[in-house]
Length: 178
Length: 338
Image (cartoon, rainbow over all chains, first blue to last red):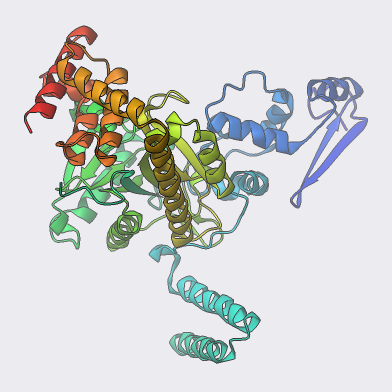
C-alpha cells in the first residue's frame, strides 16, 4: 500500500483515531508520518481540526493552522457532495454547507463538529411541517413520555396516569389513521 | 413619559431570528441566479395578498435596488444583516410596522427576524413562530428528524434560532463589572456582544445577550434561558446604578449634566462621542438626574445618528466632517425641541 499523502513510498505507519464513534484511518510512509507528527506537534487529533473550523467560523485568522496537510488529506478522502458539488476543503474554509444533501454527504465528520459547536447532536425543538405527520406525532408521544418519566420520578402518580392515558390515546389514533 | 416602564430603560429591544431553507434548491452560497430568484418568488407568494400574512402588508425590498447609504442604514437599524446583499435576489420582505424582516437569500434562503421594543422576548418569539407557521402553508423547509432545520452553517442547526435582547448597561461598564456578566452568560450557553463598534470598544454601553447553541434545546428553553439571565442583568445593573448614586452622586450628576451640555452645544460630534454621551443621558433619565426627554426619543436619536442613516437624513453622501456637524445639529434639535 502506498502512502495516502505522497502516494510515492510504501505506507509503513497507520494512524487510527476514533472520535465519537467515527473511525478514521490514515496510512503514511515514514517521511510523511514524521512531517505530520512534527507539524501537528506530535498529536494527530480531529478535535484540533474541529477547533480550526470553529476558529474560522468565529472569524479568527487561522493561517498558522498546523494541520493543513491532514485536513487536505481529508479533503481528498471525503467525496464531494453529489448534489451541489461542495468539496470538503470548501467547508473547511467557510464552515458552510452548500445544500441540504451536504449533511448526509459529510455525515461522518459532522458529529464531532456538532458536539463541539452545540454540546449536543440531536434536535429537540420545533418540527417542520415538511417532516410529515408521522414524525410530528412521534415527537408528541415522546415528549409526553418524557413528562411521564418525570412525573413518576416525582412520585406524582396521578399525573403519570394522565400522561399514560394520553399516550395510549395518541398511539391508538395513529394506528387508526394508518 | 409613556415608554418609561420599569424594564424598558435597561432592555432596549428583544429579537428572534429563525434560519430556514427551502427544499430542492441549493443554499444561497451554491444556488444559481435563477434558483435564487425562484426562492425569492416563493417567499413573495407566501407573504403576499391572499395569504394568512396579508394583514402584515409586507413589502419586498431588493438589496440591489438600494444605494449604499440606504443599505447601510438598514443594517444600522438592524432591519437587515450586513451579510445580506451579495446576489441579485437578496431581499428583505418587511412588514408595515418594520418589526418583522424576512431576509431572503442571505446565508440561508429564509431568515425570519422579529424585533420588538423593550423586554418582550416571548412576544417576539410568538410573532416569529407564527410567521414561520404561516409561511409553511406555501413553502416546504429542509428538515431532518435528528438534526432539525438544516442551515448552511452547522452553528445554526436544529432550531435555526438566534434569540437575543439588547441591553443598556452603563453602570456595569462604569464599575468594570462587564466580565462578570459575560462569564455568567457564558455559563448558560449565552454570549454577550457589543451592538455598535467592534470587540471591547462597544459604543453607547449597548450589548446583546444571545444564545450560542441552537441544537439540542427547544425554542422555549432557549428563550427561558435568555429571559432569566436578562432578569439577573437588570438586577445587577440596577444595583450598580444605586451604588453610583450612594457613593458618588455628585460625580455622576456632574457627568450627566456635562453630557447634556455638550450634546446641546457642540458644533461637531463623532458617532463615538455622541454615543457615550447619550448613554449617560439614558442612565440619567432613569436616575431622575436628567428629565424631560423620553427614552423613545433618546433611542431614536441613537439609531438616527449612525453614519449611513445620518447621511440619508441629509440627503446623500457627505464627508465625515460635515457629517459630524450634521450630527451635532440633529442631536441639539432633538433634545431641545421637547
